[in-house]
Length: 168
Image (cartoon, rainbow, N blue to C red; front, side):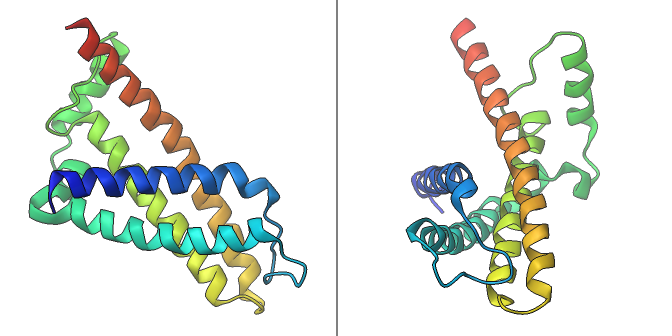
């Protein structure tokens, strides 16, 4: 995957996530898509499925060629840089944005949460009309709430990186 393709995937996924989160208060589905569903409900379903597919392909692209070691350092036993940066944060130091570390860990967790929100949403859709649908809706909401918290943290880390870049 080229850097341009990765940036486009990231931008499209970010836009989809923002739209899905912002419009979610107007989505009214429980066990199944209601008969009187409006365009927001159908748009949430369609764009949510698109976001799930995009999250899966972006996840795969980020994990290729050893990228998984950067975003998921605990899987490779390389938590040293991340822990050093975390200790540095408590001393008022900004983490680096390059080569893994705390920022990459946040990005990896956000990527996982986005993928999980997408997969649980698709599971809800597949199981719509069954007793299990309500449980999967609950899982989807929990995953989306975790994703929202990590989006906020990601925006903060990107802002800190930009601040560091401007100061140099």
